Image (cartoon, rainbow, N blue to C red; front, side, top):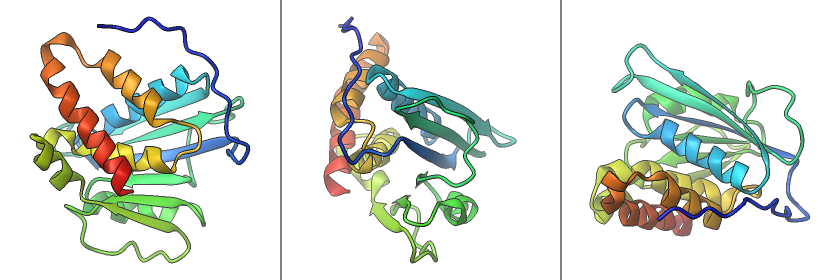
Length: 194
């Protein structure tokens, strides 16, 4: 059942940044683009300004994929993210490619189910979440993206868990309603473990 609520502009916490710039990366097929789209829709639902730029490698499924997501309380000057505040990485190639780009003091969220190696960065917060294990425990590996998204939401000041849950309930098509509870559970597990 779709909720037709009109989005209300949510007041940001007093310590909220003006914007949060995030790069999400993984192999094609790991759902990283979907995670980015859900974060963007949650930001819109909360009345934030947003940009979203997807980037695919040579092959979509199995190749590299990443997206740039900016959520802001104000107008966004550029959608390109050179120094992200957050970086979500689903696999080792993504860690190698993007860990060095995260700004000093930023947050690097890592799928520890697939990434053993350290980031080599001591000037940021590294959060390791066993996203694949969480998803498998909930019934399908396809929910690993939701586990890592939940960890991201735990650290975000501009997107809320409630907004993401609302968007998931509206975004999952009727033919996949059986996956809604799994995705919501994996999202909550990732949030709690972050």
